[in-house]
Length: 390
Image (cartoon, rainbow, N blue to C red; front, top):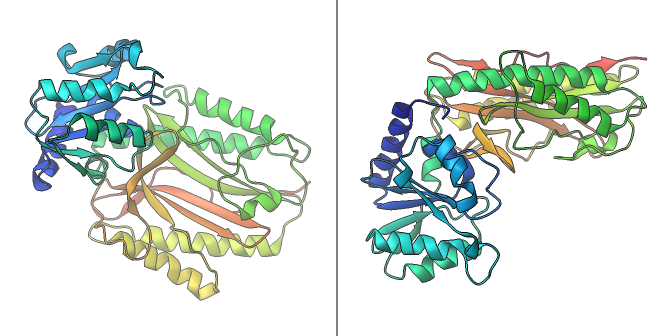
């Protein structure tokens, strides 16, 4: 259990308050991150059906997992054993039979089958089959989209969560320093990532690392003009740039960071573009303060890009915290024009300044925390284009 029982109880109360506002009596939360947030459950079992049930008046959530994973639920969650409900192997890959056939029976037995039930329609791993089983098994319920209700409850972090993210940031810094050391002409990308991953898992003497919800991203050469590319067995080439995007992880909390390295002689165009990118990133950071909106941060960022005539269509940030594959974003706040979410202390987001120009690009990013008077960066690592001249 990563947090005190009191913290988990406060999270439950926050979610139940939002449920009352939206007139939802019961939530079926399939999102792996939300399951962790509500109960502490943490296992690589999200590839098959599992969820947390939250009744608007319950004192504890219910964790619904495969029988094989019950031990993990007993160990990792704060829940009483009565609130850990398991299904057996008869429901595993025996279509049309499905674990949610049993889930709907549980809901019916608790006489919750005629309630207004919120489901996470766009959550990872919540399949169309899960949804159909809920509709078929609960014909008298009012099934609605919970509209990321639990995700939004996670937006403002507790101080304990912030401390975990600070620990993750120290690991991120070690991983990035390793990247700067091992990326060299003639070295295979996969060998470099092997060293980076080793560093991220080793962490610090005080804080060991964990697997990240996103693989270390390593676009190189022409690949820097694309997004979300991973390492290959190709070798790094002198004269080419490489973007490294990674995150240290501590107790499932992330603090992502991206930087760009250039192998060989200084390239003034890349240096100038990197400096403009950092200027835009810093403008967004400077606009990050309580009372401002995500839109305010985005407008400050794009104002610099407009000054230099740089076009960027993608969003430039999103909220972060708990992360499981395939994403470390929370799917709530976006740093993008028009997002009027008001920033409050302990809102955290990853702000990404990536500029792509056909066959090359540069990138820098920061994990940012809103404070009482402004903001702070989780990581402390130079943003400038890192040049290794041979």
